[in-house]
Length: 427
Image (cartoon, rainbow, N blue to C red; front, side):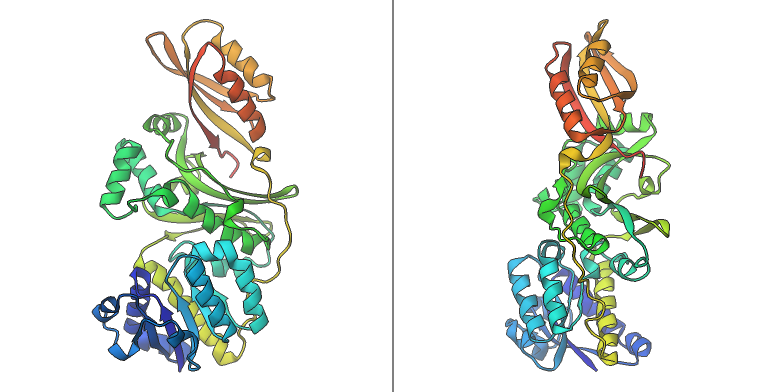
């Protein structure tokens, strides 16, 4: 019998407890071993009681779990960084194997915790930290381990994907769809982490650590969210054969690792364009396997609990086989993160300009003076002597497009630059 302690009895913790209890017989048959929840840390004991946790298993003292010699696996589900890091570090030092769903912690301090786990020869698993119920971490660790991973492009935040889907399908504005998402519980009352790309940034950091063996943190990720995406941009994207998605990007290049989260145009024919509502997906390119896409529900109590329980079962097998610590992610190389200004993309530029001759030539010169060439240009709309000009550039470094837009924004013929978004033609 493998005894575990669960730190946290919120939405995810409750899901894990329910899943372990409802699948107890099936788990025992699959493993020829039994998993017993010995203790549950609950800040609000009534929550634990409400899902059937016996009184003698409820505690408000984490040391009852961390220092219990019978508990072999500690499951951290309290969230946050500092307290969770303290609990996990102490658990590892006490010789406990650890499962966590904590993306914030792994994105910021993962390499430090991996090193500690290796020193103690124990397992540290974190499948649920990225993609909820989608198997992502384990395929990267095992099935794709024979590849050099070249790039990972992901829709890793269900809230923003739901919002962009509604904007596209229902013609809703950003403000209207945000309120709807909050009313439905998809978005927090403070949506900053989701809509500014921070949540997706933490997840792509974890994947970059794993795929590229890189000592990176979420602080290395340039995050641009969806606050600036207009309904007009959605319409123009459709007209041009694209859809807009918030993409988390990690690329291993000779000159450095690119890490970013960007609202982007992607071709409607690409598999990621069909990922709708609260679903997540990760599009991986390896040198041997080619292109692979992993898809499913990226959040929610039971999908996330599914990944947590899978990690618990895997560690339980390792304990039985006396092989813990073998699969930890340990080889770390000091790879440079590519500065944002050196990243290269095509760009969509929408601007309002004077509706008169020679305007386009002035704008083309402004771009050309900064090494930006134009792939296509369309005048889409005209009112009151103003024209809407929509351009797609060829690939260009970000520093050059930024300099060009500064110059163009100062032209007397340009009323305003309405929006600028990356165009991902070569996913």
